Length: 231
Image 1 (cartoon, one colour):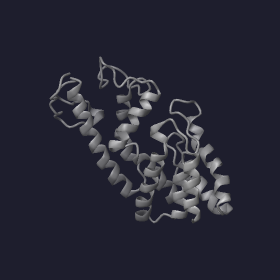
Image 2 (cartoon, helix red, strand yellow):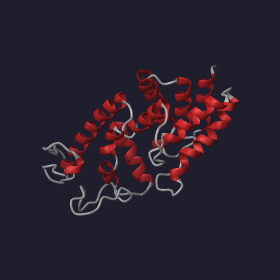
Image 3 (tube, one colour):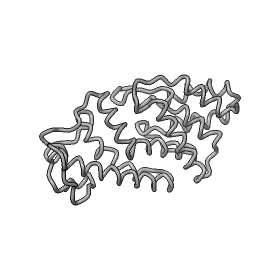
Image 4 (cartoon, rainbow, N blue to C red):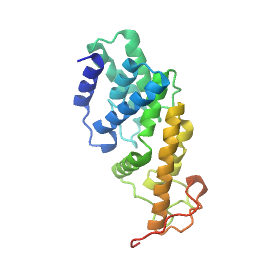
């Protein structure tokens, strides 16, 4: 077993999450995306893949005040694992830097191609079909309602994604593609974002929020689908 595979196995053994949006399946998806994007962008896989496997070593709930420190704690926790599997100081530092810099909430600039690819791969998992599932999971964990029954698309109120899961789409998800680092990541982000807009247009019809999706910041199709079931 090579070092990267050994790190993967240890990371899997240490991943214990009641949060389905940050479980081992999430780690595997991010690693697979890193492999795809990293090849296209010329990343060092001996740095990128361990960073992917260890990037959520410490998982802090989204609404916890210590959330911003999770990537730093994950990077610190990775140090001993990397040393145990033969990584020297210089390469360990590169892995740890990628882990710390990838975080959305931390807001650090990415200083290496491995950091940029890991950040893009992690953000891609917030978009598309999987992103919709993960958004619903996070909302449930925060005890948020799906949407404001009186004003689902926030025409007359301020957006609040801690209270309403649907609000997370315009607050963050629909604007995320603009913030991608790599050309290959941005292309996939735009594709997944288009799917999410179709989902939101369908939701507009199903909850009776009006046949016209004119919520500018939501970027929905002009005509929402017609609901076929009961409302």
